[in-house]
Length: 360
Image (cartoon, rainbow, N blue to C red; front, top):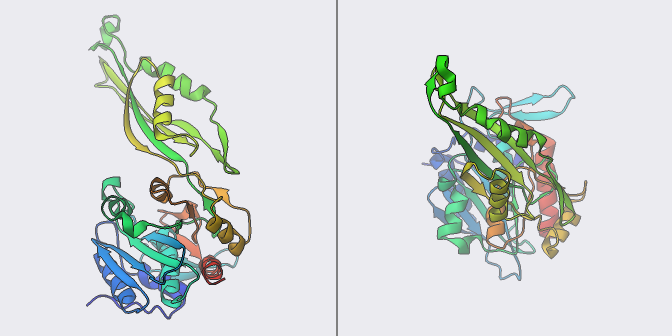
């Protein structure tokens, strides 16, 4: 029998309940079972399971449909389950433990609203997906986009990634490249016979050090780019001149630039070098010009939307021509942190914001 989830409880208590069902990537099954059982009991939802992804949809015949999604897996534990209620130094009540920020608090809000809102003002697709924290090829939302795109169809999407209970539009793109230099081995006592591949990385590092990243305004939000060396390898032994070295470069690019344009930019910067692109994900424009998005911003209130600098799965919706934003409880700085914690008032704030919008 699956774990029993009480969706009549508060979103705070639901957060604690689903966090305490351990679901490190690859072990989402028990939590997926519990979510499927809880949602299947609701007559206003049509529930579909795909692997360990659960999709629950209202079928009210509304003119517009909204997709609200969150991943149910976490990074590995490190002595941070079961969860605990604690008081922060500033007196704020927090829920501490793995998954509270990334991103089960957001999933708990979805579950609470999926239970409560049998008659929202738009049709809603609630998505709870697996394998977000591991290889892109395993990502449950990516799998649905490839094999069941009709389940993700909508006019607007919200991803419950932690955003401090503020709206974050779109996301930067992400590129990783390996830039190699080559030389000739020799004994270090006769270094003039060889060619030092590590020394040949100096111009690459100089280019990176001198690079001035752009700040790009996209649909009213300013995205800061970044180009950095994040690793360097080379060397054979303490008495050998190395014949190969590699600088691992990470490029975060504004969503106004396509993935192909980002690749072209890197190849132009490092023309003449062996450049291998090892990871590439396009960004997502903010999507805030969509009518539903504007209504959402007005309903949530609070600070003006800000850009998402990191890459998130909103880009998968963007690739399906569905404008999407990030909106969830928890500060991103605590994601994957051993001291992972979410202020409980952010959980209720996100619930209230979504509830106002879906029932206005």
